[in-house]
Length: 323
Ligand SMILES: [Zn+2]
Ligand SMILES: [Zn+2]
Image (cartoon, rainbow, N blue to C red):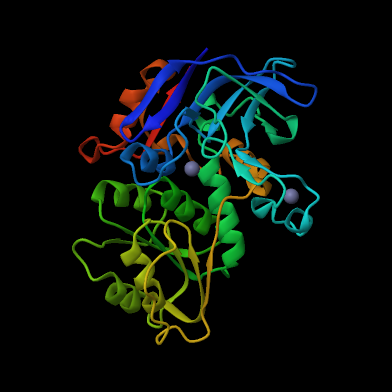
């Protein structure tokens, strides 16, 4: 079968690989559609390294070969019975906490053998393309649930890529007033369409000053979804006293907490727990993922898909790959 295989930086190509083996515990899922994530681009650009020969991809849907049911695949593996799993933190699973498409084979392949516990059924009114963009929705739900904003709170979302744009949508669902921050106007236009009250171009404006002006005493909650050290470093100066900050895109930086009295900072990752709700919100049209799609390719043209996702001139947001 064909799969997108990582060989090294700028070297991710579609190759012929052996068919996956179905065991008593695993079922075969035939690939329908998937989307390229910022993580895949980090591998492509050479920022992050993974094992050569790894099949990449961690956001995709397919069809179960045994039942014919359409399913979304959860990329995290967890045991359910270790210290962290029993405390509701499967992402930190001590037994086999791994991430498909990163430290085990992922979804950009014609088929995959996977345990049914990692499969979420897709309702009929959710199309394949929509079911290919569930991971950032699940992440946005996870982050906003941890931030626990109150109705009417200011939520400043730094970075309006796919994750940031979904944070903007979920923050609106939580009743927040959103300040969207990005360097690209074409992304901020979408933020406004999704209900952001203020859109700040960090290339032209002093973001910290602007957030302080808008909110008077600082943002109640702040999300770093730009993946930039500089954005991490700005968060203590944007949050109000006693507010909350989630670091999602980047965890490094030199932070000064002088202006962030009693504020709470935390890092956060994806969790499998929110997947069913993510699919449900897409089905109910409460979260829009279709509007994020800027490019479409076939799996056999995977390299072209990566190139488009990596080329700012093409104004990419979400690049979808179908069978
Ligand atoms: Zn991802
Ligand atoms: Zn575990």
